[in-house]
Image (cartoon, rainbow, N blue to C red):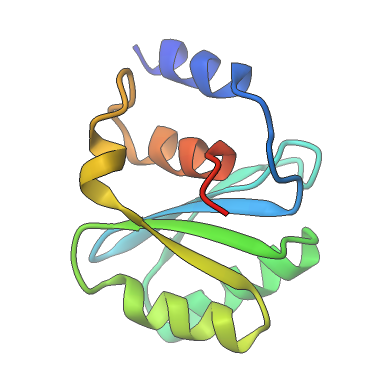
Length: 120
């Protein structure tokens, strides 16, 4: 099923070329950018401050200007603060709405969907 979700995400149109998607949990972040931005367009980052700064560095290196984040708790707050302090436009997506999108079952597919969603 992972291949099916990946294929479905690849078929979604890219609405904002300078956008990224992040799925946030307590111990790990999954981040997706467009495939033309980096050879490894989906990455995971731990949630320590140094890792959040590494995430922000990578997004800026990829030319990202906007970020859509999905989080089920308050784990989004430090991510939001660091990304916003770097000048990125950050949008928090309602996790309940994202959960209802059919065919998405993993954190990786969630971040890829957020990357392509029209939330800005």
